[in-house]
Length: 121
Image (cartoon, rainbow, N blue to C red):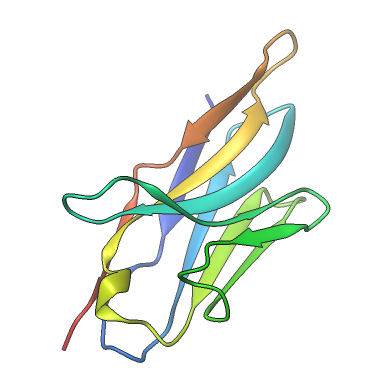
């Protein structure tokens, strides 16, 4: 069974930094785009960053210059490093992967359960 398992997150002071990691468990046949989204209370889920298998990246304007996404294709990992954190970065962060789970299946979006990031003094 393919699952996305996030780690990292927690309480961080404004101006601080953190790293989120996400591992794809199981044995997917192929993983295409991976990324991170976030959802703050009362708001819709929004893109933070995505990365393709060839390491082409895309960042939301709200985080450009403060965020770096990376992936390890061999280990099926995607990481997000965020610095200069602001209170408005407070949200639940979700890992995303567009992958093909098995022979005969189509590419489908998979999501992790999310990890909470709170930026506060």
